[in-house]
Image 1 (tube, rainbow, N blue to C red):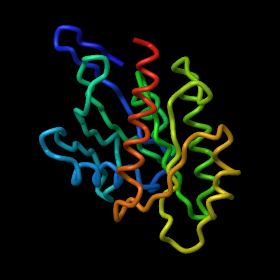
Image 2 (image 1 turned 60 degrees about the vertical axis):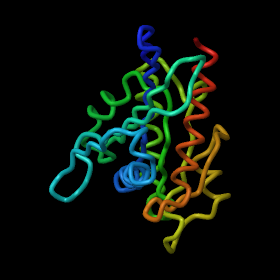
Image 3 (image 1 turned 30 degrees about the horizontal axis):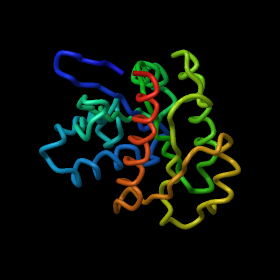
Length: 194
C-alpha cells in the first residue's frame, strides 16, 4: 500500500497467482473488457511468442473510496512457470491481496500445490503469511472434463478456509465476482491499518 496524502489516493496491489496456464491473464483480459474505460487504465501484457506471460500483466482500476481517499487497484499476474521464480518474488513486493487461480483439472493438482507453496514461501520473504493476509481462491476451468468437484478442491487447496469462487475465465463466469471479493477483502484489511 502506498498513500499519496496530497492527492488523497491509496495505491493497492492485487496479484493473481497460480500455476502456468491456470487462467490468470484471461481473468485480467476479461476484467479489462468488462470494466468501464473511465475507471481503468491500459492492460499491459508482456508475453512470449507462445502467448504465455513472460514477466507480468498489469491493469489499474480506480473504484470507490476508503476513508475519503480514492483507491487505485493495481492488478498484476505472475508468470506461473517454475523458471520464473525470481520474477514472482519481485512482483509480490508490496502486495496487498492475492487471488490464487487454481486449475480445476485433476492432472494439474500437483502444479496447484507447488504454486501455493511457492506463494506462501514468497509471502514469508515479505514478512507475511497466508494465515494473516487477504487472499482468496478461484477454482478456474470448471467447464472442462476431468475436473475435481468443489469439495475435493476445498480439501486439497483451501486449508485456511478462505473465500473461494468457481470460475470459467474464458467466458467470464466468476471473474468479476472474484475481483469484487478480493477488493472487499483488501479494503477491509486496509481500513484496519489506516
